Image (tube, rainbow, N blue to C red; front, side):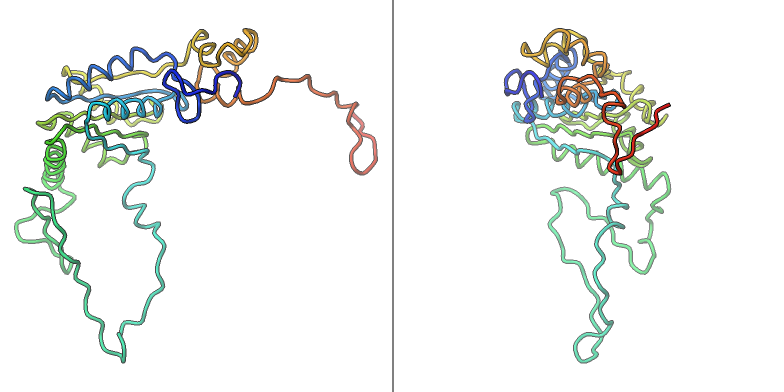
Length: 290
């Protein structure tokens, strides 16, 4: 890439420095300080593809680790849990009988140590629910599940606080959006910060509604990741790039950091060759351009 390649000024592993975004970084610092002081915070980063949302979430994760806050970061929600199960590599089937034709005993999962203070979910056998339990698809069962997730977040955050980072939530399914909505309306009673990032054009109406609902409280913030200005583009490229080239790259990228970085890796544009200068194909015949 033209211009800077060092790791100064908050440079990422790719060598591209972080420029601008001072308003977003300021909200990060204030929200992390409030979370460390026993408060719930919800941050929503909104921006077009390539605007730098993932890069900013990385900065948030680094700042949280510097404050000794536990961090759970998820790179994307493009694959749901059910899809991941269906895409597993299938093992070849074995005959139903064991050695010498004896029936193979049923597999019983080994008991796993649970989270202290958390209940074990009852196992379903024979397609029947345990007595007194609600169907999974009912609102009561979903509410019980969301409360269990909230309690789990409170337990994880108990020692030193928790920062939960979810990227690309515009790909999230309805159940995930409903869970986030529950956590916004009934926040965990612990030092928890939830940060999400999404593209506005691909966000569902329910996602936009829960982000809007988070703004009613002091702990909610909707941060728009805007394109870089021309001055920020020049700062990102560094002093080794001419002013004319900076202006050209700014116009071509629209201030989008991802497109800017890709275009800056290309060489200086050269005048295109005229068709008549190289119009002899491998067959040896001349082209008729008239």
